[in-house]
Image (cartoon, rainbow over all chains, first blue to last red; front, side, top):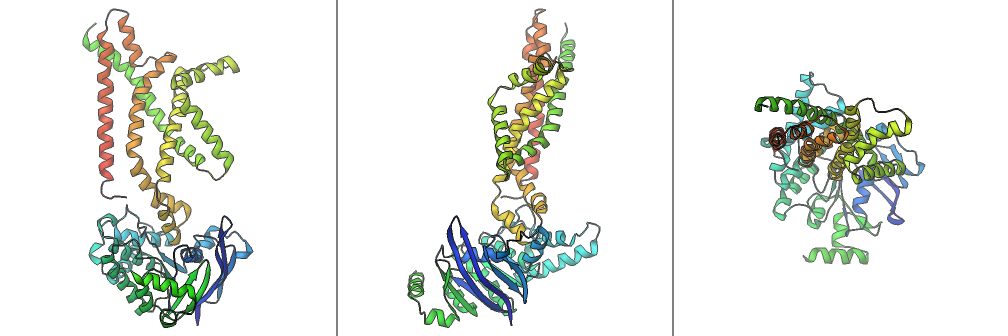
Length: 257
Length: 214
């Protein structure tokens, strides 16, 4: 049963069509990897799902409920848009933790603001903090609660960012090249966390350059080129029996190094 | 004329400088932020009007602006400025908010877009993102250029003598008419002590923000 249906997404920047009619579906608990060379539109697609970009056309349906129909041009009011984007979580390439807050506060800030938690409300705060601690434990960073982002390595920061995204219990967790800003020896710890999330049946969309990881972790792979879905299928289909010339070319060049 | 008497007299003058300094800060710090918002506005008209305003204010001498504020109401509108201090204050507030606005703008625009986007995907409102995420980082970044500008303000206050406000330098020059030249140089001590105090304060504030980088 599909948790996400994306239909006919189109997006251009300054008359350059970056996404030309993108449609796909995703089932609950599945992991979708999006691969493709730079400029193929992978990141833009992810940003459209998170409403960081507004597509010109297309529909996004989550849990059989129409979230947005971009073609209707109804300027969504801020409040309803914020509510809708909470269906998705997004982990950025550059982590984007809040530098002035402790790791704990990085996790709890958004929830406290969303729930309008008052300082007096000790019970509620304790509950939120406990949830943050549990998540930090899950990403193996419970000893860093009181540290600040600048004291952590890139890999640790990215794990915190994952925990932060999970605080709001999104239905679909998106990753935008989560390991691209990391030193090679630090990518492993982040990929391990993502793998554990998959084992916990988290629905995820991962834009990645890590071909081996995409092959091992995903239920479904999409190969994008020039703003279209050139090929999609199971990892075995795409990596072992690529049909299109472009995918063959892409795979041979990205597996070379 | 004893040293104590001169000191007291100069101190009386310096109180004018201090008043002008404090009142200018009080009004120009918030006004500067509003102007900064204007110069970053999506509305082209507002943006260009504020940019032109900043250009005029930064492009002309403060002393000239003092003359304009003090004399123009009387000459053109036949309603002379009732108080010299009010005129000075208006000129200083306008001048310094233009400078502060550029510092604010620089600080706000230096915050990476990713900080806003992180707030957005976490469901925060625009004002929550500004006040809870961005503002603290902006303040940390603008403390050094702000301290620079504020210390300049301390010394600029003596420009008020050009519209005959009895501030410290005016008092000191008065002593030269009775043959005393040393009070003129003695005024440096007042400025140095005041700026020294400010420097310590700004160092303290910078230290407060030292606990994180970024």
